[in-house]
Image 1 (cartoon, rainbow, N blue to C red):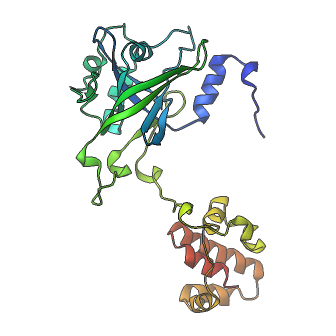
Image 2 (cartoon, rainbow, N blue to C red):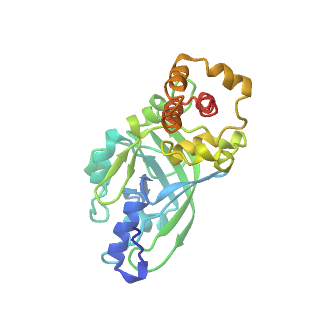
Image 3 (tube, rainbow, N blue to C red):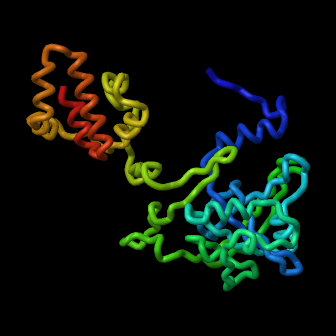
Length: 297
């Protein structure tokens, strides 16, 4: 069953709940800004992402409040002073970030309220958050208002002038490790997501080669009752199927021999057990071995 909703048929508040519950997880822009008097503001926004690397561009959206159509101090500040620092949020600071989202009166410094540490920026006036694993000093290039009613977004388009990364988030190859970054993201309602443990997984990028595609998988495999859509997607990412000789040699492995002999007179059970074995190889990232199993009967 599908629940279909026309946004115009329900209240903005109701659709806002569905919208944010489904479009998730969303990264968090923990934005520090200053007003024309130099007062500092620190506030999180989950309408946020990266939109290009040349020039490096980040966009976040301080939406108009749904309940009363008022604007947020961050939006007012970037219109007064076109600079912002976008700080990335990790698990160690998520509660302090949440506290900083409190709607304090204008002029209240959320660094002080949240207990986070301001660090002087090098190229912009707003300070960055010392505890943040990564921070981007930005020039605000443009602010685009999407509408004037409650819930309307305001796209703050930012060019990164300088980036800061804590050394602790890099792996031995000098790349940012998702395990060490330990980022958090926004879900619907009061829910958050932590990018850690089993929540993190790898999928080989298909753009380095042309996979055969699911449409080229033999029908008896494509219509498997064991293999999932994800399994078929991984199988379709192979560039060339294993050679006949490779498949023949692989059939001599003890595990495969046991299945081929045991179920030689029961085609349905043979197919199911071979597909289960192939699935196991896929879970271990052994794509070619999975194909050798599937081509063995």
